[in-house]
Length: 177
Image 1 (cartoon, rainbow, N blue to C red):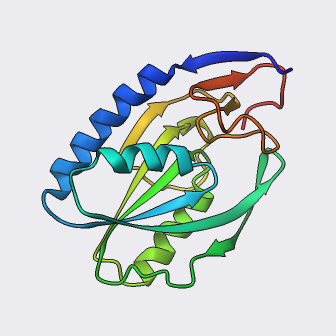
Image 2 (cartoon, rainbow, N blue to C red):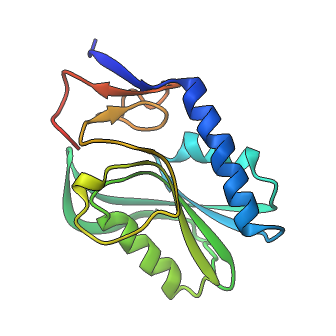
């Protein structure tokens, strides 16, 4: 079993989600939100966050690939895109697990803008500013991290650890990513 160092407990995550939901609700006021959830990592985060929002919400799913192992290849591919994916004229909230290099998120933001979204904002559970390679901004951020490899609450290492209710540093796993 891998050695895990807890960085954010389940309680800390849930408290921060309530704060994010309040801020998002105020920013969108009574407008409907189209949430674009980036699979697989943001699934747990999005499910918990969206239940807390006071706004009417519709949900779309997308899965993008840009990583080979623990490093971004720089080449973003759409792995899964809902057939009925519609964002034209809508206020879109992209929900992502982690913003690190910015390559994947920049690709998705530009794609959603090209599809005619009325507005596009980004909500990330985690942000690693030290790894940024593309200037992309998250409007809502759960936690800011140093350059450590983390798992849990949707984040994985080789498809393991997603189901943890907390976020932990994988101490004996891969290097920073």
